[in-house]
Length: 79
Image (cartoon, rainbow, N blue to C red; front, side, top):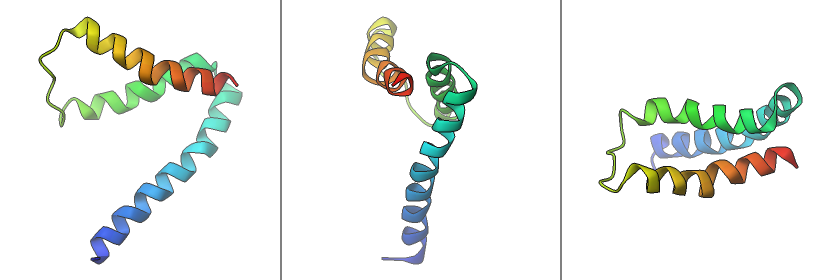
């Protein structure tokens, strides 16, 4: 494995691990549902430049995103 690959793997592990600290701090400061929404908005903005939009209808895409992702983290933050 190249050094570049090891550094990329370390970055993923570091970002994943530190995320729990920021979730704990965030939940103590703002409402859990707002934290879940802000989390996805922060990811959405850069992703718009790199991800091709699928050809399915927007209502199905938004429904799937809400059910599979937003609601999961909103309930996790509420717990």
